[in-house]
Length: 101
Image (cartoon, helix red, strand yellow):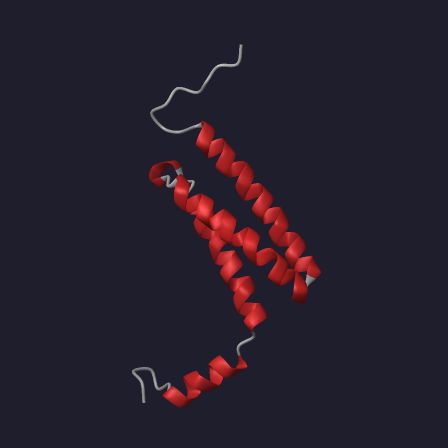
């Protein structure tokens, strides 16, 4: 038995019950959260945020196969993340924003 009383057989059974669709949705949610975190001015990593955006974009069509409404929600999350990315890229710390003349 494991440390918390969970056996290897119980873990295997939980994995067998796991829906791949649910795992894809969970992964997309995690990517969105990490993507936003990478845009935080205190720890900005634009390349990592862009990677999260690209991965989220790749998962949306897969999510759509199972639930069009959830896919629509993730499309909106992706659009919002892209807008936040554009703002973060324009407001890079230590750089003066370009003035529109």
